[in-house]
Length: 60
Image (cartoon, rainbow, N blue to C red; front, side, top):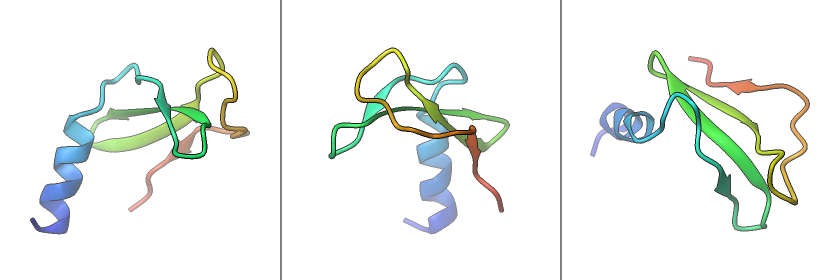
């Protein structure tokens, strides 16, 4: 699968609101997509959550 097709598949599987996800090290975060862009936020409802100071946005 080409990189662009894979990226579209990943982005299309995320909701606009974001669903909480957990990393392999146990930290929670909230990925979401809007307008074909990927956003990463803290998932503060779960512990331990990632200590992001600002929302992360994919930049091309």
